[in-house]
Every structure is written in structure tokens, then in C-alpha cells.
Image (cartoon, rainbow over all chains, first blue to last red; front, top):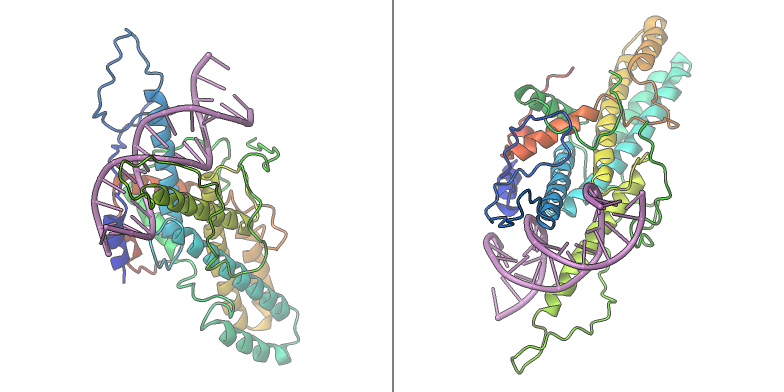
Length: 175
Length: 175
DNA sequence: GGTCACACGTGAGAC
DNA sequence: TGTCTCACGTGTGAC
């Protein structure tokens, strides 16, 4: 069922070639994580390469975007393809399905909490059976488990500490 | 704090496309409307499409990806920044928030349907206020919910190269 | 021998 | 001043 992942692992070049074990100074603006296979060859003494810095910065940005994309992929339960566009497409479908279902659940709760207990059980069961088989009638398919991937994230959290914290300018978690 | 509220319409170049608010973004037509006056001056006699075809194809792909990204942006209610990485970040946060909230609502419904009416309303309201303060459709943001730091953890996980897809193994422990 | 999808480096533009 | 983000074209590898 998850053979998609290995396929994915072959498909994209899996640019995981960055050693991330550089817990360094608390401000991490940008660090070149890739071992430079090309020489700088700028004999300017304290030569911070003018153009090479841009290159590594760009590469870093690109990598960040890919990581985000992977994170998005892992959050969406059913991904069909690994195309960087299909990932976003599935994510959109999934979001819309969740929104739809959530509004429906909310309406159901609202109705259910303000209902005389006579007709309560009837309408409840009806609605619930209606939306269990598939998420919505407009979607093609989506929605496996409602909240399973969050657990996966949690278990990732066990194995690994937080490293990247950049660009997430000041927002404190409230929990 | 972090509110960098600017006019974001000028940031990216062309945001004209992207229809809104109807589902079904699928299978859009691909068209090329660029000025194809690139002469590659191929030394070969037959100048069919030596490299220019690749160029237009690549450009088309890039445009498709941007379009998907805009679509993703439009379905996420609260977008902080327009950075192509922040869009995905907010989308992930939103998805996780929706998943969490949806499971919560589901549990609530389940509890509510199999509960005598006496203690029903009490526990319901309690649960709702406790962990979903912004449940309604007018929620201010559920971005900065419990799932903010999880994205970073995921990113760390990906950048480490642990992309084997082991993450999808079903585990049902619910917090 | 084609297309598809990708990463890469580079110039431009916006802060 | 520099830094950041972007689109672009090009080469490569996988179907």
C-alpha cells in the first residue's frame, strides 16, 4: 500500500544529502550544508564569494520548499502520485473534503444538541451513515483516517529533535 | 508580531488565473501563448524543435505548479505570507488543524449520540471549549494551534533522508 | 528518440 | 549596502 513511497524515493532525486547535524548558533540564517564539490578559488583573502553565496542560498531555499512539500505530502493521507503538482492537487482536494465534512459534522452537532430527544437518534443515524462511506459526493476520492497522520508526526517527534527553526518569526505555541 | 501584512498582489507576477470557490480543479487545459521567436540556430539543417520544445514544456509545467499553489492558497483560509513555502506551511498547519478538529467533532458526536441527555450537554461544552476554542466557521486562525512545530519536525525528518515511507504504518494510538 | 519531471545556476526585482 | 524570492533556460535521468 505504501509502495508509493519507495517509488518516490527513486523518483525524485531525494536530495537528502545535507547533513543536518549542525546545531549551531541559535541564529541560523543560512548555512551551506552541502559539501562543496566545486572549489571556490577566490584568492581574495577573506573572500566571501559574491556569486557562490547566492548559489548556496538559492539551493537552500529550494530545499526548504521541497521539505515543505514533503511535509504536505505526509499530512495528506492518500497521495496518488509524487508529482510535485499532484501532491498539491491532492492536498487541495483533501482540504476541501475536510472542510466539507467538518461543516457537515458541525451542523450535525448543532442540530443534535438542539433537538428534542424524540427525533434525535433518528436524524443522527441517518446523517452519519450518509457521510461515512465517502467524504462527499463531489470529491473523487479522499479521506482515509481523519487524524491518523498527526500521530505519525508525533512519533517522528520522538525520534528526532527540532533543528530548523528559521523563518518562523515570532509565534509562540499556545499549547 | 509576525504580521507582515502588505499588498500581496504585486508580489508574484501573474495571479490572474485561478478561479475560486468551486471544486474540481482537475484537468485544466494547457496552452502555450508565449512568443516563440527563439532561434536556437541549430547547425543541423532540419530545424524542427531542437530545444525550444523543452523550454515551453518546462515553462508550462512551472506554470501549472504555480497554479496549483494558488489554488492551495485559496482553499486555506488564513495565509500569512505569500512565499511559496509559507503557503505550503500554512496549508499543512491548516490540514492538521482540520484533522484534529474533525476527529474531535467526530468523537463528540459519537459521545453525544450514545449519552443520556443529562450529562450530555455538560461534557460536550466542556470538551469543546477546552481544546477547540476556535471551532466555528468564523475561526480566527487555527494555524498557530498545536500543529505548528510539527511541521518543522516533519521537515527535519525529511531532510534527514528518512523518506522510506515507513511513516504510513497504521498505528491507532490516539492522544 | 521521445516526453516528463526534476535540480541546478543565474539575472532581475523587491525589499 | 545586502538578502530574499522568483522565473527562466539548460542538462540529466527515468520512463
